[in-house]
Length: 252
Image 1 (cartoon, rainbow, N blue to C red):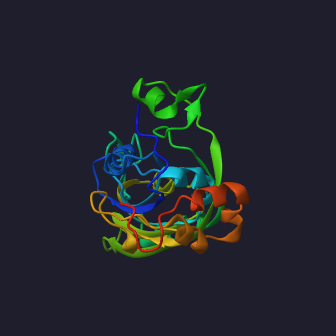
Image 2: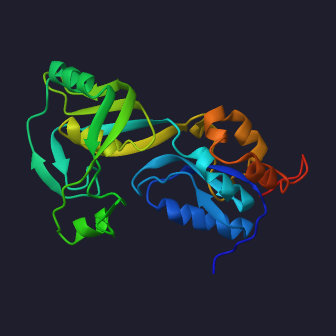
């Protein structure tokens, strides 16, 4: 059985490297703290950047930290698609890269309120089984659409002259948006993905899971929008904060 201790209580802002799964980092923090540990949204193994983890009784506050806007920097290969929408999949197609004008038109169509299919390589359940497991078995499934809001989809840089073979994008989206599907809608696939922000937390505040210190839950809650905080009842919040260490005492 994993540790179920309610303390230390706090929020860990972890900078995930490429390679390990998000759940491996949850387990790593749990080994350090010996407390129950949860997350407020995962990243694929190939992706890097900000993971918001919760320790001890702070796991009761998970609803406050989900459904928050997110920012990413994504590199997209515009000349090929893969089975997973990222570098871990098999190449499905190679095609001509778009011109800059064609890319600009495609980006404009993806800004604002949109609907995109959930990736077949996701953890969403289809008929009671994870979609990625069905995909590994070669089972073709019509994936449901998910509504998202793309607040910003801006070009940082691109490669190519007459045509754009790859592009680096600054992406600001509502929670639950799959950046891989944005890449697919552009005719390509993500080659790298870094989460830089989970409103209001920045990856610049994050640290490696082996050295990260816990932020007091009270301080983290104080930075959230009111509507996010109120997703958990005042009584539950008070119970969690009552277990925080006195000011000045480190939690991890």
